[in-house]
Length: 192
Image (cartoon, rainbow, N blue to C red):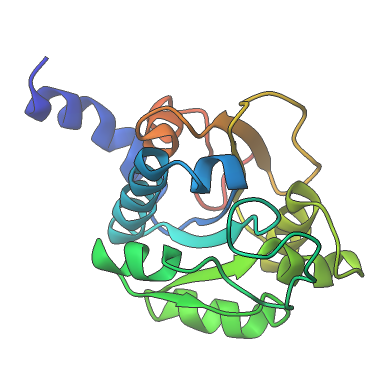
């Protein structure tokens, strides 16, 4: 199949998402794999360019970001993720997730907010919420249309969240775009 044909078939499903708000959480297994990380960043940037308001929640509990046993600074972001996202187009901003108003302003301005799972945990009433729970609480606070959890296992039950919450194997190339091209996600304001 040619690239043009693939794009022509996928575009209607993707454009239906324009104007929606999505929270996408990526665990350390996805973020620690260079190929999966680049694919993830390209997908998020592409979705932002077609009008999907994306907030990235990242896992900082794995990988080489912190010494073993070190406390996670509130609002810390994974080094390089913000820069990588920005290199693909729309500017990304690393910040604490404790201010939904600021996140909405950044989304309205066309930016991609990047927060740590611990920052999203502020919505769960703790600094140590699990990545899925923190992402679900953040999605609820933003009244997001969808929540996607990218993992290195692709299994499990998604936490309760917005209209749709799904777990996707983030190791697959362009897993986020592939998920949305399946056409299972509602657009903004549509019924579950």
